Image (tube, rainbow, N blue to C red):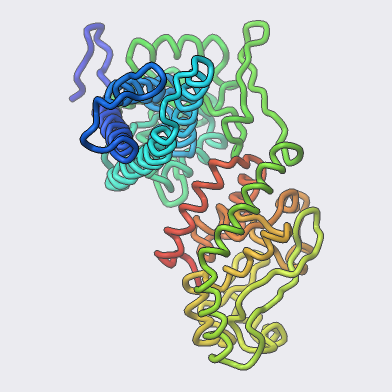
Amino acid sequence: MLATCADGAPRPRGRTWVGGYLRSLAWTDVFVVVVAVGVAQAVRFGAGSPLEPNGAIGVPAVLVSAALIAAWVLALRAFQTYDRRVIGSGPEEYSRVITACLAVFGVLAMVDLLFRLNIARGFLLIALPIGTVGLVLSRWGWRQRLTQQRVNERNLERLLVVGAVGQSAPLVKRFLGNPGLGYRVVGVCLPPSWKGTPEEMRVGDTMVPVFGDFDDVRDAVAHTGATTVAITCTEALGHQAMQDLMWDLEGMSVEMMVSPGVTDVAGPRMLVRPVAGLPLLHIDKPRYEGANRFRKAAVDRAGAIFGLLCISPVLIALAIAVKLDSRGPVFYRATRIGLNNQPFKMWKFRSMVQDADRLKLNLTHLDEGAGVLFKMRDDPRVTKVGRFIRRYSLDELPQLFNVLGGSMSLVGPRPPLPDEVEKYDGRVARRMLVKPGITGLWQVSGRSDLSWEESVRLDLSYVENWSIMQDIVILWRTARAVVAKEGAY
């Protein structure tokens, strides 16, 4: 039985968790900021000197710390890091947190320079990285907890989908396959033109209840307790009906989403602007050149240098193991196709016996790969050491030399073989508009367990919507996927 509001409309179920979750985030952020500033003060001024003067005007260190804590917490709110539309999924939440941290310290640095306050710079240099990393990690921890709760069907938004079958089915399928996104599909409303509206609509192996047509949306919300309504067919609904529906849902405290009919386009490329009273969705072209390419190249080079310095002992140990395990060279230099269909030599530790490429011709009938890929779970060409380093993706570490040389990126589409590229159609060929990567969305989303179509979709999504924050998230997910050995063989 649904509870009702004062106006008789049903009170939405399933959203009570949002307030508690946001309060937990806020208090955790305050704790992290206090700890970061406290550590910085103790390191810079000493734990027993809270009243020690700081700066040219002699303000006690404890007051400087208190002012920094207040400014930091306010910055997190000013940059909308508690916006319920970005919490729980996607890189936007992390991006806003990092932007807020950099902004508050940037403003403090400018104020210090303009007014010559001479506040101890070491104090700020210690607090910034500790606090920023702490805030990002705490948000990640809360997100992991929320995702697990959603997988266990807790803290989910109840979603009612409104639209034609052709437009509604892909959206329903995406939500059904990803409970971590936070939505449970409770039903659909189909157009009046749908003849003989059934009680259920099949999406894959799942049957989704049908609650009448577009005129029955309000009753369907009341019956299902939906907290969100997704419109997938605005042209069939009509402008007047859309406006009436918005007013009805506003009175019922139910959120409304409209699917624009485009997929795998990230938020920064989309802008809604009213023209002559009509909201038009503007979609920017993907930007592969200019500052974006320079920033990505700079991050790649710096990351490759840092990575090679850190893992050099591991590279030496792996090289010795490969050499002692079987006859042949330590490295395998495979020809791959890179940016703008240019071939290059990709470095890997040799994980197979010599002449593995020639032996592949005798194994084509045992292919377990997807699409144009060749994969075998128990490939007889793989050596003992090779099986271990492939399981943990250690054979790909020498690709850092490719990144350093500029032929590859840390994150990007999978580097394809020449014979694979020959089979690409025009859509798949868009993968070649950016450098291939050591890791990417394809690798952290299942690797060899993905279908060819899904791996292509993920690579194209990355190509179309690249950002530094997305690269950071993918690198973090790569580390987790490697440890879990997900889809690697």
